[in-house]
Length: 503
Image 1: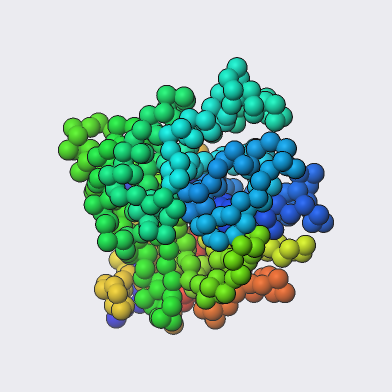
Image 2 (image 1 turned 90 degrees about the vertical axis):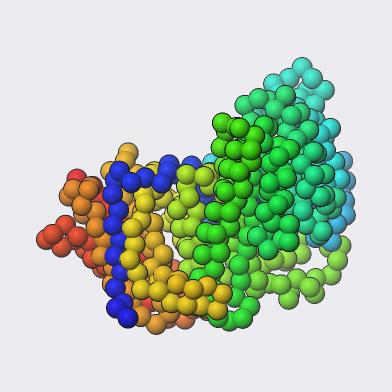
């Protein structure tokens, strides 16, 4: 087998424009995402509202455009009114989703304040588990109406004269899941989502709405769920959601790194289903995709089973990520970029402490997990137009996947900056992969940076005591030859960002 790969990209062969919201994230009232994560009054770096400035800086370093809130499973039993008004009058409630106590010290207004500080927008979820259209019309009136009504005037009395103008709303969360408070059949959910969508858009016609797709591609009702839900909601919604997590419980790294091929298939199936409903309804509107939960998640499963119920902000879902996890996160980002024509929003789940790129110690430091880096690189350099990648690569067979290319890659053309960025993962665990990049259609260009994330230990991770054990370097060897070809060596099991400046 020849260990050599090539990639041709042409400026006129376009997949689609990147919607910046593809680099979104997620904060749920779960574990230490809020309490001890973004919010910790009394911390040495807490601001006047109790938000951690060190965490805010790490979030801003990712340039996160949108953050989904407040759930997740949590939202299906959440009364949003518990989180507004004077702090000393807020109720502590049982959260049945995660078997904890929710103190409601952070609610809608505080979260919107945090969003402004983090330079991000909110993707607000409404409770369609225990509630429905009535709650939805109240929360959007409170959030988006200028004044002169009960709920908008109540917001003003809480110190927020200007409306929050939240423009993206999720119609519930994972309503197909039996674990969900108020789970529904596809017909039950489709009807509820349709009526809720009508109410929300009657209050504010400028918003966009996300209907719940299947909670994973492994659900027995997938993709019938999507088809039925869209039968009911097509005229009123703009997106259908996808959720998927991956893990390496079998300690099979070659198979683990191939799992993004399953993500490719998942995306393709949902697009096909959405387009079938569009055709069936003789519709003109394309339903786009919101991949609003995605990540690696498996490390913390055993620890989570041992948590004492009904505590406040216990350390739940605190996966400690290693180098191979960062490689799969890179492959998943590439999977979404390859369908940037239809995947318009996505949320890395989640942002702080809970299956997250950022970790904190209560009262102490905040640091970057391994997965922080591919997410940051894609967000910072993956803006513009995704180009069709014509790739030749040696392949391998894994336990669950055949013909897995060692090279997983995509290119993004940022015309405004006169740059092309290639994101590439070498899945080979033992050998470097020579890569030839052909950019002839762009004319002259030069390599301005070749970032590499690599480590001899696939299981290497960062910690509070060793925060830089896994971190990228700028020592990649991408260079242009006399024929205008770019040559690079992609190290074994590595994530690469090759940035090119166009003449």
